Image (tube, rainbow, N blue to C red):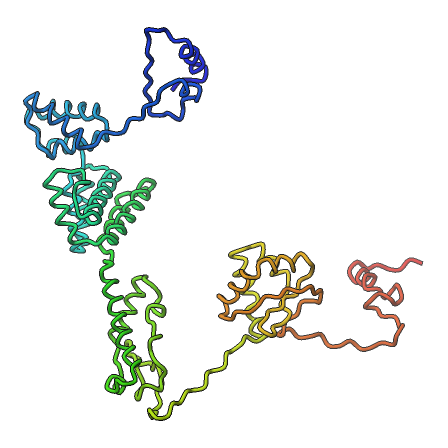
Length: 469
């Protein structure tokens, strides 16, 4: 790239060009050219040449030169050129000088040290079979073959991308490879789901970044490949969700009062509960969230308690009471429980800490205030000044949500101006001082004789001070 002074000299030439001269500039770094130069030029942006176009050009050259080359070898050269036709022709000349007029794909892979595409299909075969031992052996083969590990991971990501394209589009036109491999991709796509391939691609991309700075890239590759092989298939999670839906339907059969046979027998759901545990272990969602019993009708509709067996313990889901259809009975609703002042005091410091983790400024202001009381569904907070009051009022919604997340109680936040000393119910009050006659001197407040002042007493005790006449 030219310097600033060279660009200024070139600008002078461009402003007054000779009539018989045409300037053609070619660069891959357009952003480095000054706008004064670009404004005086006609700009043409060229795209990379596709693999198919490069392979077609090389095929024509080989026919004219009398060279026999395999189709797979042409595809390897075209991919290695990375969209540059000149580089593809240079690579073709090098391989011809090495192999002669009979060029096979194996020879091209050996000369260019390119990872054979068969290795990538072996990786997907290992993932299907969950063969961890074969994965370690494959890494050893790659290392002994002298392949670059990052180049292998880049090719593996491209291989998974081709598989994803075939699964998504159900076609192979967008896959840049030879026809035999396109057929293999079409067959391979039947064994994978789109969500599985997306997870595999994400792991491979993260592994490629990790190997770049790793002191032991082989160990990283072995661990990453084992993670790919041992990855749980998402189809199992879908099956578990389907079983949970079936469980909901079974539990929902009690909704119809006419189905006496369905409600007269306890529903055994031990298998379904184990399904919920597997879903939770698979990080799909918390088991308590996955297992919803909301479709269950009130317990009065059942003649026997519904028990769910999970492991070795049986826990009743609902207690039933025998009722008659002619007389409807409803159990009294349990009164709503409110948080007490003592419980609020116990949770105060934890609440301040949680608020500081999210918003340190509001947490600091809350820590400088104190809890006054809890009454009528409101949390009254005593603030030392107006700034603290206004700050807490601006963030009421955030404070309400954070307090509810911590304690499970949703209360209004009411900051008030209050300068009383900070106390808690657990703190014991000091014993009341003995009353003194009005107007009598008190050594504590410093109204007595000068020699009894607390400061004077401290000086005498610590420094041995004596009064001066």
